[in-house]
Length: 78
Image 1 (cartoon, rainbow, N blue to C red):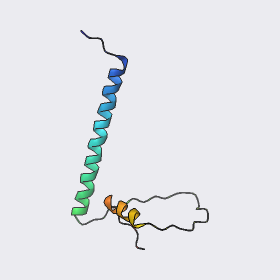
Image 2: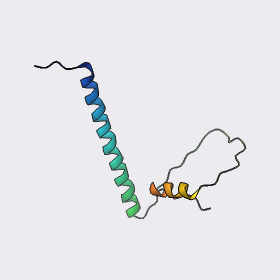
Image 3: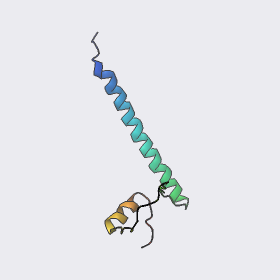
Image 4: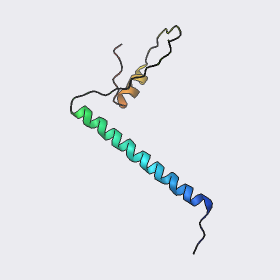
């Protein structure tokens, strides 16, 4: 009978958490793909309660736009 090291149980817990996280990521990706297959669009919207400090705006680079599209997020028109 081997004695369990104190960290063994914590390592098992960590590995289970990582596996669950990966499964959730896969499930999320599949759900987004199904939404897109059905003709709907997906997006992420952020809203804040505070007023912006003299927002001058910003420009997305082509690399930014490619990254957003890789996440199935359609960038706003230029």
